[in-house]
Length: 230
Ligand SMILES: C[S@@+](CC[C@H](N)C(=O)[O-])C[C@H]1O[C@@H](n2cnc3c(N)ncnc32)[C@H](O)[C@@H]1O
Image (cartoon, rainbow, N blue to C red):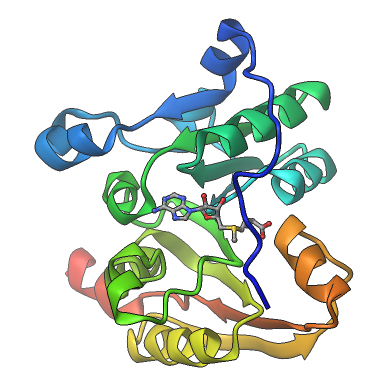
């Protein structure tokens, strides 16, 4: 079955003031050459306030992000996305819903997580990432070992990582890597039709392909606390 093509949709570029309100850009070149000079990616920097922060890695056109942000006005939601038309679409959606608890970070996920401080994220989603199984596509993987290590570092004690895909081999490989990182405890593992919560989940579920979901919890770092307070 062909993979869903991202580029085949029209999106209107938001007004400059709307972009300024909702979007933060971290250029790859800056992240690579001048990472230390860039602002950290935190709730305070993005929203001017501290509340539980959810990161959606590869947020696409933002349907799920905006729906969740509408349902949880007391929490903050940040989509990280590289594809500009998807960024625009998500921003238009957030503005239409008059949300002030959503931001979109336009950045490459292979570089940006280093800007997120330790233990600053209450929840992270990796929903239908491109399943990079072929050797030549491995460098495009957004759920690389390096990013799994970042997730273990940036998630708060008790925080949840939610990973969903349609692709069994990719699922098995990534669940193994997440477990091997030693940073997480299994919470949920399932193969179900979930009602098409995201655009890509809708696409696959309409074609009778169930969603493979793995959720893991970041347990408290008792040893680290004891060491730092000693
Ligand atoms: C298959 S789509 C899933 C979108 C959404 N999570 C959903 O479930 O509908 C994967 C998304 O990851 C984004 N993406 C892929 N590689 C990325 C990277 N290196 N940095 C940021 N976003 C990336 C793509 O642009 C795309 O929007």
